Image (cartoon, rainbow, N blue to C red; front, side, top):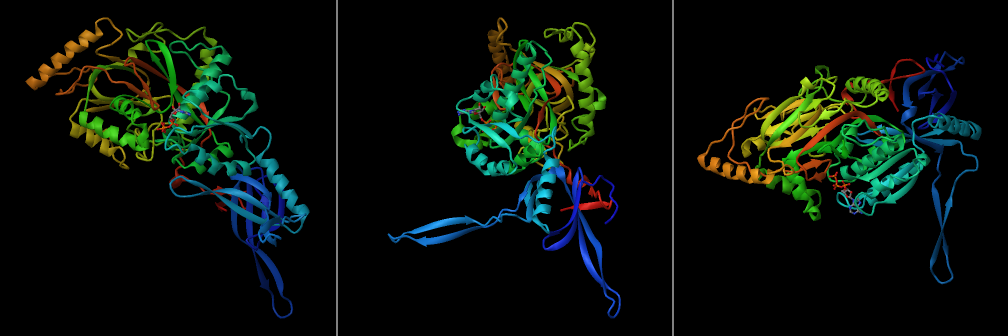
Length: 591
Ligand SMILES: Nc1ncnc2c1ncn2[C@@H]1O[C@H](COP(=O)(O)OP(=O)(O)OP(=O)(O)O)[C@@H](O)[C@H]1O
């Protein structure tokens, strides 16, 4: 046997696929050295020599379960007196099994994970039970990251209403891995969020939801509201929320599943289940939303005004159409091509945080997110020592103490077809690279995309690039993109302000006049645009993680890696290094 470069916990010669193999257990791996027998020597002096022909490794963190081999079920048929047949199922489980099964993760195309079973044969029952016990001890070591008990919310209403079926499909994998669950089927909107306010969270290791982004958003808000309450944090303007003690897992069963696609790379329920089971974690940024300095909710995907706000408001009335409602409403809103007037003020992120068009994709183990996570940790500690955060004046857009550099704020005003703030890449099956492909999961920034008023054809050209791999959807003179930490929008016609509505009507009349004249103008401090034939003066609504917020004046602040999700991040298969074998110390393939 070769010298090992890791501590050996257990080692035996076993059989895998009817071939002998030297199997070694270390704290991180199971290494399988396949052995070949050669006959050497001459005449009657033949000698059998064993050589290692191939070495393969199984990372222990990717072992789903281990158990004595489950035998086949034999069915015996008995004739009954009345002519019927009675079947008796007999499980041929040996009293002292000598085979054990290791269930591992296998990579499939398009970021999907599948389950694979390896059956090892031992020389006797004692060796078999030793292996099962020792592997279990390692994968379920105390203080490990795998959840053993989950609180599960199943939303029977979202998506194509298939969440209960999706859950039943993945449930056997959780059973196999020994994860127990308290399952609650949601009965109404905000049911999951409300339950989380009083549930005894100390009895579970995580919260899982089966549904779409709306269901996830409820769990996220429920957990953050709860942790703020437990820590005595008031949700005042620009508060620093408390981090929830539990991770969130999402089994996709919605219409867009943007959270899952952005954090895993696919909306495949089994892949999500496997990442939850092995306890993968990734820190994800969270936005706090305020209207008129009043806290509204937290969000993680996209907060949009204009096109996507109108699309959502329209599609909510067409839920009976299922996920196709988004295509129909999207088409209608493109035809209408509305633009809304207002002012966007934003605090740009530091240059070191990159730019929405810098070509840096956020993959598993992203260094940008790792650095941001460490910085946020330090900043949170420093902030917790202060009496309170500096006050921010929504009117002037400035901080009271100047410590956060109010001069850094910039303003762009004009008419916008869309204002999109993207916190994670917002991938979904229709846009595999996302709404902002180089956005990061946990860098403490949002990508702000300002689409100024443009022709219908131009907007379509922009939209057509979003699903196309490698196409730069921001490369248009009517689009500005910024990486920001905070922003606010003030509509030209604020319905809350005195005279807002009359002003709105006056502007609408003015707009009609200018349309008939065929000319209008627009000013922008961040770059000027040409104007615009259409501009209904009334305001749009915000689309916040798939929920309509019917108030145009909004303020968003991002909080770096405020929650942990059961997910690995999107794996970069081109960059994956082979595992280093703990026995031969060379790069080896996976089993
Ligand atoms: N029993 C229920 N009846 C009605 N609504 C419910 C029920 N349970 C949950 N909900 C609400 O359903 C909404 C939509 O669910 P969900 O977001 O999972 O589906 P979706 O909107 O189709 O998917 P996506 O957000 O991915 O596009 C959630 O915001 C949630 O509040």
